[in-house]
Amino acid sequence: MDKKFLICGGDLRQASVANRLYDYGYKVSVYGFSDTSQFNDKIQIHTSIDQALKDVDIIILPLPCTVDNEIVNMPMSAEKLYITDLLKKMNKNQIIVAGKISKKLYNIAQMYNIYMADYFEREELIVLNVIPTVEGALQIAMEETAITIHGSRCLVMGYGRIGKMLSKSLRDLGANVTVYARSLADLAWIKANALKGISTSQIKDVIAKQDIIINTIPAIVLDEEMLSMISPETLIIDLASKPGGVDFEKANKLGKKVIWALSLPGKVAPITAGEIISDTIINLIDELGV
Figure 1 (cartoon, rainbow, N blue to C red):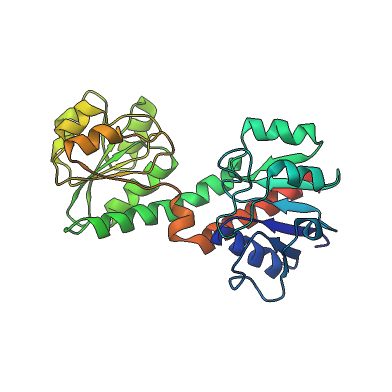
Figure 2 (spheres, rainbow, N blue to C red):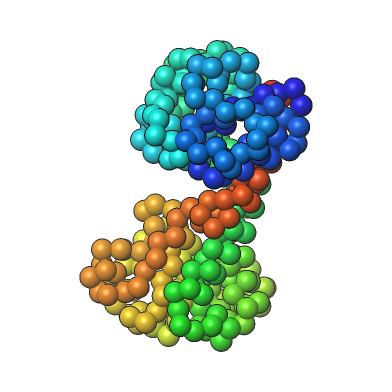
Protein backbone atom coordinates (compact mmCIF):
# COMPACT_ATOMS: atom_id res chain seq x y z
CA MET A 1 0.00 0.00 0.00
CA ASP A 2 3.01 2.30 -0.25
CA LYS A 3 2.29 3.08 -3.92
CA LYS A 4 1.11 6.61 -4.61
CA PHE A 5 -1.31 7.32 -7.45
CA LEU A 6 -1.97 10.53 -9.35
CA ILE A 7 -5.38 10.62 -11.01
CA CYS A 8 -4.93 12.95 -13.94
CA GLY A 9 -7.97 14.31 -15.77
CA GLY A 10 -11.05 12.48 -16.93
CA ASP A 11 -14.70 12.38 -15.92
CA LEU A 12 -16.72 10.98 -13.02
CA ARG A 13 -15.21 7.55 -13.62
CA GLN A 14 -11.81 8.96 -12.67
CA ALA A 15 -13.29 10.41 -9.49
CA SER A 16 -14.63 6.96 -8.67
CA VAL A 17 -11.17 5.48 -9.37
CA ALA A 18 -9.59 7.95 -6.96
CA ASN A 19 -12.08 7.28 -4.19
CA ARG A 20 -11.87 3.51 -4.64
CA LEU A 21 -8.08 3.48 -4.47
CA TYR A 22 -8.16 5.72 -1.40
CA ASP A 23 -10.66 3.39 0.27
CA TYR A 24 -8.27 0.52 -0.42
CA GLY A 25 -5.61 2.35 1.55
CA TYR A 26 -3.46 3.75 -1.26
CA LYS A 27 -2.06 7.28 -1.30
CA VAL A 28 -4.02 9.24 -3.89
CA SER A 29 -3.87 12.75 -5.33
CA VAL A 30 -5.64 14.30 -8.30
CA TYR A 31 -5.02 16.90 -10.98
CA GLY A 32 -7.19 18.26 -13.79
CA PHE A 33 -10.56 18.82 -12.12
CA SER A 34 -12.23 22.20 -11.67
CA ASP A 35 -14.97 20.72 -9.48
CA THR A 36 -13.45 18.59 -6.72
CA SER A 37 -16.62 18.03 -4.69
CA GLN A 38 -16.89 14.41 -5.87
CA PHE A 39 -13.60 13.41 -4.24
CA ASN A 40 -13.08 12.14 -0.71
CA ASP A 41 -12.08 15.22 1.29
CA LYS A 42 -8.84 13.54 2.38
CA ILE A 43 -7.60 13.14 -1.21
CA GLN A 44 -5.00 15.76 -2.09
CA ILE A 45 -6.02 18.16 -4.88
CA HIS A 46 -3.34 19.73 -7.09
CA THR A 47 -3.62 22.73 -9.40
CA SER A 48 -0.03 22.43 -10.68
CA ILE A 49 1.13 19.42 -12.68
CA ASP A 50 4.71 19.94 -11.48
CA GLN A 51 3.59 19.72 -7.87
CA ALA A 52 1.23 16.84 -8.64
CA LEU A 53 4.03 14.71 -10.08
CA LYS A 54 6.22 14.93 -6.99
CA ASP A 55 6.57 11.66 -5.09
CA VAL A 56 4.01 9.71 -7.15
CA ASP A 57 4.64 6.28 -8.62
CA ILE A 58 1.75 5.75 -11.01
CA ILE A 59 -0.13 8.29 -13.11
CA ILE A 60 -3.62 7.19 -14.10
CA LEU A 61 -4.99 8.78 -17.26
CA PRO A 62 -8.67 8.49 -18.19
CA LEU A 63 -10.63 6.43 -20.70
CA PRO A 64 -9.96 7.49 -23.38
CA CYS A 65 -6.70 9.07 -22.30
CA THR A 66 -6.74 11.45 -25.27
CA VAL A 67 -8.93 12.15 -28.26
CA ASP A 68 -6.24 13.70 -30.44
CA ASN A 69 -2.95 12.11 -29.32
CA GLU A 70 -1.85 15.52 -28.09
CA ILE A 71 -3.86 16.63 -25.07
CA VAL A 72 -4.84 14.62 -21.98
CA ASN A 73 -8.60 14.11 -21.91
CA MET A 74 -9.67 16.50 -19.11
CA PRO A 75 -13.36 17.36 -19.78
CA MET A 76 -13.90 18.48 -16.17
CA SER A 77 -11.15 21.10 -16.26
CA ALA A 78 -10.58 24.38 -18.06
CA GLU A 79 -6.86 23.60 -18.13
CA LYS A 80 -5.04 21.85 -20.97
CA LEU A 81 -2.26 19.36 -20.39
CA TYR A 82 -0.24 18.31 -23.41
CA ILE A 83 0.91 14.72 -23.29
CA THR A 84 4.44 15.64 -24.32
CA ASP A 85 4.59 18.16 -21.43
CA LEU A 86 3.46 15.45 -19.03
CA LEU A 87 6.04 12.99 -20.33
CA LYS A 88 8.82 15.58 -20.13
CA LYS A 89 8.04 16.29 -16.48
CA MET A 90 7.92 12.62 -15.41
CA ASN A 91 10.93 10.69 -14.18
CA LYS A 92 12.04 7.28 -15.42
CA ASN A 93 10.68 5.50 -12.32
CA GLN A 94 7.11 6.70 -12.89
CA ILE A 95 4.68 4.85 -15.14
CA ILE A 96 1.39 5.70 -16.82
CA VAL A 97 -1.68 3.48 -16.92
CA ALA A 98 -4.38 4.72 -19.24
CA GLY A 99 -7.35 3.73 -21.36
CA LYS A 100 -7.27 3.31 -25.15
CA ILE A 101 -3.61 4.09 -25.76
CA SER A 102 -2.92 4.52 -29.47
CA LYS A 103 0.15 3.20 -31.22
CA LYS A 104 1.26 6.79 -31.79
CA LEU A 105 1.02 7.50 -28.07
CA TYR A 106 3.03 4.40 -27.21
CA ASN A 107 5.74 5.60 -29.60
CA ILE A 108 5.79 9.08 -28.07
CA ALA A 109 6.13 7.63 -24.58
CA GLN A 110 8.97 5.41 -25.74
CA MET A 111 10.81 8.49 -27.00
CA TYR A 112 10.69 9.88 -23.45
CA ASN A 113 11.57 6.51 -21.91
CA ILE A 114 8.23 6.35 -20.07
CA TYR A 115 6.40 3.04 -19.65
CA MET A 116 2.68 3.01 -20.48
CA ALA A 117 0.13 0.24 -19.90
CA ASP A 118 -3.43 0.13 -21.22
CA TYR A 119 -6.05 -1.04 -18.71
CA PHE A 120 -8.71 -0.99 -21.42
CA GLU A 121 -7.11 -4.04 -23.02
CA ARG A 122 -7.63 -6.14 -19.88
CA GLU A 123 -10.16 -8.95 -20.24
CA GLU A 124 -11.61 -8.50 -16.74
CA LEU A 125 -12.44 -4.86 -17.50
CA ILE A 126 -13.94 -5.69 -20.88
CA VAL A 127 -16.13 -8.43 -19.39
CA LEU A 128 -17.34 -6.42 -16.39
CA ASN A 129 -18.05 -3.38 -18.58
CA VAL A 130 -20.65 -5.51 -20.34
CA ILE A 131 -22.93 -5.19 -17.30
CA PRO A 132 -23.44 -1.38 -17.38
CA THR A 133 -23.48 -1.49 -21.19
CA VAL A 134 -26.38 -3.94 -21.21
CA GLU A 135 -28.22 -2.05 -18.46
CA GLY A 136 -27.75 1.17 -20.40
CA ALA A 137 -29.09 -0.39 -23.58
CA LEU A 138 -32.15 -1.66 -21.73
CA GLN A 139 -32.68 1.79 -20.24
CA ILE A 140 -32.61 3.37 -23.71
CA ALA A 141 -35.03 0.75 -25.03
CA MET A 142 -37.46 1.47 -22.19
CA GLU A 143 -37.21 5.25 -22.55
CA GLU A 144 -37.36 5.43 -26.34
CA THR A 145 -40.29 3.10 -27.05
CA ALA A 146 -43.98 3.23 -26.16
CA ILE A 147 -44.11 -0.50 -25.47
CA THR A 148 -42.78 -2.77 -22.78
CA ILE A 149 -39.76 -4.94 -23.40
CA HIS A 150 -41.93 -7.82 -22.21
CA GLY A 151 -43.64 -9.16 -25.31
CA SER A 152 -41.62 -7.04 -27.72
CA ARG A 153 -39.81 -8.47 -30.71
CA CYS A 154 -36.09 -7.84 -30.28
CA LEU A 155 -33.27 -8.57 -32.68
CA VAL A 156 -29.76 -8.68 -31.23
CA MET A 157 -27.05 -8.45 -33.86
CA GLY A 158 -23.86 -10.21 -32.82
CA TYR A 159 -23.17 -12.81 -30.14
CA GLY A 160 -19.97 -11.61 -28.54
CA ARG A 161 -19.64 -10.62 -24.89
CA ILE A 162 -22.34 -7.95 -25.07
CA GLY A 163 -24.63 -9.93 -27.34
CA LYS A 164 -24.60 -12.91 -24.99
CA MET A 165 -25.60 -10.95 -21.88
CA LEU A 166 -27.97 -8.66 -23.76
CA SER A 167 -29.95 -11.45 -25.39
CA LYS A 168 -30.27 -13.27 -22.07
CA SER A 169 -31.38 -10.10 -20.26
CA LEU A 170 -33.99 -9.33 -22.91
CA ARG A 171 -35.32 -12.88 -22.73
CA ASP A 172 -35.44 -12.72 -18.92
CA LEU A 173 -37.58 -9.58 -19.27
CA GLY A 174 -40.03 -11.47 -21.46
CA ALA A 175 -38.97 -10.28 -24.91
CA ASN A 176 -39.19 -12.46 -27.99
CA VAL A 177 -35.49 -12.51 -28.81
CA THR A 178 -33.83 -13.34 -32.10
CA VAL A 179 -30.04 -13.29 -32.38
CA TYR A 180 -28.17 -12.73 -35.63
CA ALA A 181 -24.71 -14.25 -35.93
CA ARG A 182 -22.38 -15.01 -38.80
CA SER A 183 -20.32 -17.89 -37.43
CA LEU A 184 -21.58 -21.44 -37.09
CA ALA A 185 -20.02 -21.65 -33.63
CA ASP A 186 -22.01 -18.64 -32.43
CA LEU A 187 -25.20 -20.04 -33.92
CA ALA A 188 -24.55 -23.29 -32.07
CA TRP A 189 -24.11 -21.44 -28.77
CA ILE A 190 -27.28 -19.43 -29.42
CA LYS A 191 -29.18 -22.69 -29.90
CA ALA A 192 -27.54 -24.23 -26.82
CA ASN A 193 -28.74 -21.25 -24.77
CA ALA A 194 -32.33 -21.83 -25.97
CA LEU A 195 -32.44 -18.70 -28.12
CA LYS A 196 -33.56 -18.32 -31.71
CA GLY A 197 -30.57 -17.77 -33.98
CA ILE A 198 -30.52 -16.60 -37.59
CA SER A 199 -27.73 -16.45 -40.15
CA THR A 200 -27.01 -13.95 -42.91
CA SER A 201 -29.29 -15.79 -45.35
CA GLN A 202 -32.24 -15.48 -42.95
CA ILE A 203 -31.97 -11.94 -41.65
CA LYS A 204 -34.02 -10.36 -44.44
CA ASP A 205 -36.95 -12.57 -43.47
CA VAL A 206 -37.15 -11.23 -39.92
CA ILE A 207 -35.70 -7.73 -39.82
CA ALA A 208 -38.94 -5.99 -40.85
CA LYS A 209 -40.86 -7.64 -38.00
CA GLN A 210 -38.80 -6.26 -35.10
CA ASP A 211 -39.78 -3.64 -32.53
CA ILE A 212 -36.22 -3.14 -31.28
CA ILE A 213 -32.94 -3.88 -33.04
CA ILE A 214 -29.71 -3.69 -31.03
CA ASN A 215 -26.43 -4.00 -32.88
CA THR A 216 -23.16 -5.03 -31.24
CA ILE A 217 -21.10 -5.73 -34.38
CA PRO A 218 -18.34 -3.12 -35.03
CA ALA A 219 -18.80 -3.17 -38.82
CA ILE A 220 -21.51 -1.83 -41.10
CA VAL A 221 -24.22 -4.48 -41.07
CA LEU A 222 -27.25 -2.21 -41.32
CA ASP A 223 -26.57 -0.71 -44.74
CA GLU A 224 -29.06 1.03 -47.01
CA GLU A 225 -30.58 -2.22 -48.23
CA MET A 226 -31.13 -3.56 -44.72
CA LEU A 227 -32.33 -0.22 -43.38
CA SER A 228 -34.92 0.07 -46.14
CA MET A 229 -36.58 -3.10 -44.82
CA ILE A 230 -36.90 -1.81 -41.25
CA SER A 231 -40.12 -0.17 -40.10
CA PRO A 232 -39.93 3.55 -39.23
CA GLU A 233 -41.45 2.57 -35.87
CA THR A 234 -38.55 0.27 -35.02
CA LEU A 235 -35.97 1.54 -32.54
CA ILE A 236 -32.38 0.84 -33.59
CA ILE A 237 -29.70 1.00 -30.88
CA ASP A 238 -26.10 0.73 -32.00
CA LEU A 239 -23.67 -0.31 -29.25
CA ALA A 240 -20.73 -0.86 -31.59
CA SER A 241 -17.62 1.24 -31.32
CA LYS A 242 -16.58 3.50 -34.20
CA PRO A 243 -17.37 3.35 -37.08
CA GLY A 244 -20.48 1.62 -35.70
CA GLY A 245 -22.68 -0.94 -37.37
CA VAL A 246 -25.23 1.39 -38.95
CA ASP A 247 -24.96 3.58 -42.03
CA PHE A 248 -26.13 6.63 -40.10
CA GLU A 249 -26.34 8.89 -43.13
CA LYS A 250 -28.63 6.48 -44.96
CA ALA A 251 -30.64 5.83 -41.78
CA ASN A 252 -31.29 9.55 -41.39
CA LYS A 253 -32.24 9.84 -45.06
CA LEU A 254 -34.69 6.94 -44.71
CA GLY A 255 -36.19 8.36 -41.50
CA LYS A 256 -35.11 5.51 -39.22
CA LYS A 257 -34.89 5.99 -35.47
CA VAL A 258 -31.28 5.25 -34.53
CA ILE A 259 -29.41 5.87 -31.28
CA TRP A 260 -25.66 5.37 -31.31
CA ALA A 261 -25.00 4.57 -27.67
CA LEU A 262 -21.26 4.86 -27.18
CA SER A 263 -19.39 4.57 -23.86
CA LEU A 264 -22.46 3.56 -21.87
CA PRO A 265 -20.61 2.45 -18.70
CA GLY A 266 -19.28 5.97 -18.09
CA LYS A 267 -22.66 7.54 -18.86
CA VAL A 268 -25.12 5.31 -17.00
CA ALA A 269 -22.96 4.03 -14.14
CA PRO A 270 -19.79 6.14 -13.71
CA ILE A 271 -19.18 5.04 -10.13
CA THR A 272 -19.39 1.34 -11.00
CA ALA A 273 -17.34 1.93 -14.17
CA GLY A 274 -14.66 3.65 -12.09
CA GLU A 275 -14.61 0.80 -9.59
CA ILE A 276 -14.10 -1.67 -12.41
CA ILE A 277 -11.22 0.43 -13.76
CA SER A 278 -9.55 0.81 -10.35
CA ASP A 279 -9.75 -2.92 -9.61
CA THR A 280 -8.33 -3.65 -13.06
CA ILE A 281 -5.45 -1.22 -12.46
CA ILE A 282 -4.60 -2.94 -9.18
CA ASN A 283 -4.49 -6.30 -10.99
CA LEU A 284 -2.31 -4.79 -13.69
CA ILE A 285 0.28 -3.20 -11.40
CA ASP A 286 0.45 -6.33 -9.28
CA GLU A 287 1.29 -8.34 -12.37
CA LEU A 288 3.87 -5.76 -13.43
CA GLY A 289 5.43 -5.93 -9.97
CA VAL A 290 5.42 -2.15 -9.65
